[in-house]
Length: 499
Image (cartoon, rainbow, N blue to C red; front, top):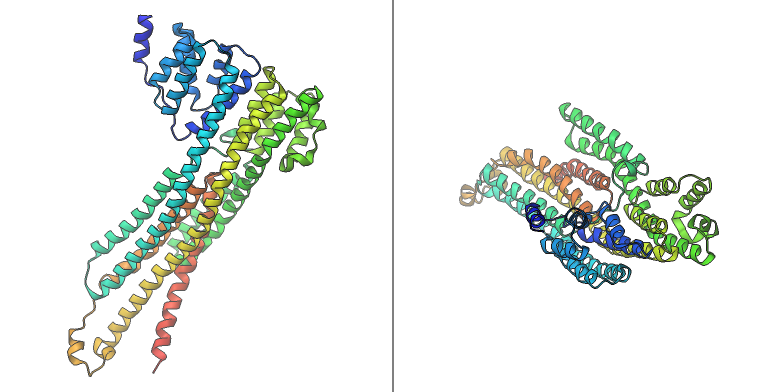
């Protein structure tokens, strides 16, 4: 035993991704309670738990290693791994598990109870993160507007007093850093979860948005660079790039909405399938034909294909994998795995269907709450960006136009000959305006990316949805860059026409 302990000390602390641990642990415990309901022996339950592709599985792998390689008992292995666990939630779970296993009681009731407790804990953490996210979305809007107004005031102040290019550049850098910091805080505050099926398995459902991304994004970059080299006005460049990126964002948004609809129906499908199989006394494959397809909503076409595939005597694993891959949903993948593994291990179909639907229901309800916060913030950010972009361009144009007017007419012509003493003391400094005029367009472009990233971070979901927001901010920036000089010129021409 001494050699085992010395070997254990040399191993690094078991750790995991703390951002996804709560989301993964909810699935981990729901899965373990489902397979435990089949009456599996303890070693098989831990072996299945260690093979799950989650961050929490690393702890159960360590428990398995201690049991099989170092001859620990499961209760003692859970205690040792729990004491060394980096995450407090895993430390608490493993120590409770060690005490329970030492009593010799079956794992079924313990795991079901722990799954319920984890669902409540995850719900509280998620809702707390949503409250924080809601406050930070309001703060982000206030910070963005305030920092833009500081630059506007500084731009006007440069006319009265020579501030220097370094001071003006410093203010602009601070404004961009404030916006970037706001995006980072939103990312930290937003709940962490996995919505879209990742990797090659998810490519089937993502075929259209991925193809558009691969084709249109490089084309937009190349065409935009070519237009800049060809001295095309920046406003037109941004509008063209925004229009080219819009299909990517549009179909990515539509795909994300489709996954949301499917996630909302998977809980009903798995519960109804399990209940039907148990009540009729048949297998889930045969029970599919007895389900009212109207009850599964948006999943109806996929369920019909699944039924056809299973009745054609294809391998059940392949049929269910196709069902999952066509959905593109990580939640559906996890729910289906709980159901199919539980059935394969001999568990009651109604019991595993209830546990799988329990997981899907908990996650989907919380996502709907997040959607309410993120949708409002997304449209607010787009409107705010359009206003800030226009305001920056408009103020710079007005101040630059005023400088041109002063240079052409002279101060005395503006203030009148009767105020000789006042005219002599009145001076203007327009040395920084050329620098500001050249810098404001790149600043607006950078803000377009930051203000597109902020709502995407708050909303979560499919990564390519970023291009939905980016296309809108680029279009708003291009219109602002083209319209603001025209409005400024119209104001000066109208003023000049007044006798």
